Amino acid sequence: MSELRVGIVGYGVMGKAHSYGYRVAPMLRPLPVTPVAAVISGRNGPAVAAAAAAYGIPEHTTDWRALVARDDIDVVDICTPPGTHAEIAQAAAAAGKAVLCEKPLALTYREAAAALAAVTSAGVHHAVGFNYRRLPAVALMRRMVAGGAVGEVRLWRATWLSDEFTDPDTPYDWRFDRQMGGTTIADLGSHLIDMALWMAGEIGSVCAQSATFIAERPLPGRPGEAGTGAGARAVTVDDASSALLRFGSGALGAMEVARAAVRRPCDFTVEVNGSRGTLVFDYARLNELRYGSADDDPGLYGMRRIRAEHPSHPYAGSWWPIGQGVGYGASFGNQVADLLEGWPDAPWDPGFGQGAAVQAVCDAMEASAAQGRWVTVSEVTGAGGAG
Ligand SMILES: NC(=O)c1ccc[n+]([C@@H]2O[C@H](COP(=O)([O-])OP(=O)(O)OC[C@H]3O[C@@H](n4cnc5c(N)ncnc54)[C@H](O)[C@@H]3O)[C@@H](O)[C@H]2O)c1
Image (cartoon, rainbow, N blue to C red; front, side, top):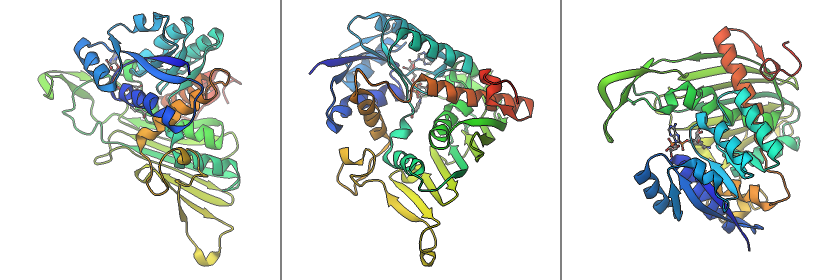
């Protein structure tokens, strides 16, 4: 079987997760090609060398442009901070490579649209790493919504809470920099907005608020230390944001994202209330859904707990026997298997078009919070004028 050779740009948390995904995917289902993580890049030579050894990747480089230019690389997989995504994606498209890009696709809708134009005109495969879609319970939730299990979607709500930014001594890095890390709206919210668009359809307008509670961060110290005390840098991103959403369908939405929630590790929830039922996903119990239907026996009023581990459920049959469940890492194996299953004919999904659509909602939320008013998504995209 032929190999599909991947160059991974960035060796941090996502470089590791994606490397894992390429190893696992062929164990999940038969694929027309075998993905091989062939080379990985990063700015720090010794660190990228150590990561390559740990992830089982034979080659490494400190020059992402050299990785993109290699004739023996078919796919460029972007696992660097958001401020670098659009440039790397455009270079990869120009070199004729398929591109998988971590979320958010870019810093702004304008940048995301430029990346979309680049992959479209190059005619290469493209995808954004909205991996949470590929958890069995989240995929089942979407399948149930699309299949009418809750009736017409009326209310959609989601939260994503972490404590990443709660300690004022956490030193400055790219996540605190609007020009490199983007916003908390985009960092955490891009996953939620992707799920909202996927499950409940287009979002027409938003009304948001944002706050930055810790205005500056100490400059980084030596490895293992916190700040040096020798200086600080202003934080240019939101610590927390929340928004009301109006969907094109008439459904109402509410969402809250925060990296300022003490003792919240990476908790997200998504709930859909429809005309005939309710579905709830809670990441702390990621193999489960709660479901209640208006058709249920009133004597059993409440919601049942569905375990998304049955072979009939999305992804579940390719993993473990029922009762064992899966974790976060499974979403990366599922992602690679989904993308490569139809290689080279099937387009990848979700592609940069979805990444740009998500970015437009992020931009609308940022503008709304800054201006204190409802903002239509079409004001950001320029489609259909302001309303
Ligand atoms: N899908 C998910 O579950 C998930 C989870 C975490 C992060 N992410 C996304 O993945 C991307 C990477 O995040 P991460 O947590 O792996 O980051 P990280 O800090 O762990 O790793 C960043 C990597 O990018 C490289 N890099 C290149 N240019 C850089 C620059 N200017 N500043 C800093 N590092 C630079 C670093 O050398 C490093 O290899 C981000 O877009 C983030 O939003 C996605």
